[in-house]
Length: 458
Image (tube, rainbow, N blue to C red):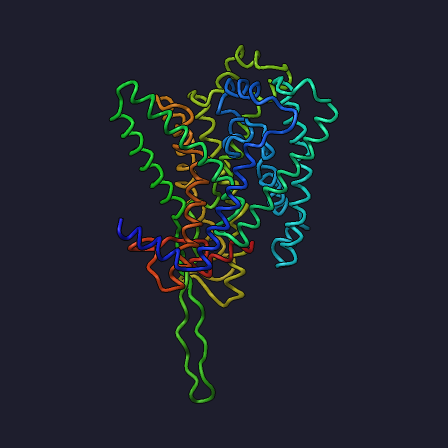
């Protein structure tokens, strides 16, 4: 406790870090405040009653988790930064397939990144308009629109408000990144996820205490702690491939002497794909039930069809088996897209560096590819396990709201964002010659090695 107080005091002593943290907290407060400002023409009581009957594990429930409840509140930030995330994913995938986007990502440097950011923002607005229209249709289908307001006014005004809310949330995220602490967009999503934790924790505590299960509740917390620690290990885990730079001649004429070649390493992450395989697998699992509801105009056919009923139940055995397999497959696919061994080999050749015992060129590329394939297997299996843990927790009697924190996209985003933010805080402390956040070791960040910059430039 004494060390914790001392660390907080050191953080507060650094003026720039203090201002960044306060600036971040201020913008986060504005974002959370907008999650409770209801759209004009919406009846909150009707909306709340209709939302409570929905499943928290379907696609709408997932969006509500990421927006911190703003989706079910019909707030001005109902869509949050999700359209921006969707646009970013689309632009990233285009970078793998379209030469123009490849050139912007890899060869045009800062100007290319600015163009990509502009394209992403414009695409965000277009996606927001489409998703906003679908969201207003959903609100109208629940009967939560006041009959006193004109339909034309309701649609026109709220579609503009939703688009403005998303653009404003995107602006808040960018300002946090520039003048605050941490990655702004990821931090807003994390705040939305954490906002649901106290309510879920209190509900689980009261339900367990009411049933006389205090020991079981403590066991659940211990299990959650163990899952978080395992997630930290896999997120931070890297396979270091040693490299060596060629010797250089130091001095001139007769005094010239060869200098020892510098040593470094290529850090290949065990989980290079991040949360993307889970997102793709979830979207694919939601597709059959969503299509059936759209065709039938309701959920009757889903309950009547045993296959659709199983695919719509995240606790069923068939759902989790298919979900697990999809995540393993998508992990390999996405890793193959973002990790390019040939570009690693070309970079090493340009820098006059090599992997000891491996010839430059294609042998180096094949070696890196083989290592990547091997370490992706445990990473993909872990992602699959962490994704089905909420279903296992729910099957063991944990309420669904609290079980969602035992794994899946929410836990990976929380761990990744918290580690990234703590790494930035620690870098400020170390620059001012204060002790870091941890007593031994260090919090690994995205810039722990210069060779890590290779992957970011691909």
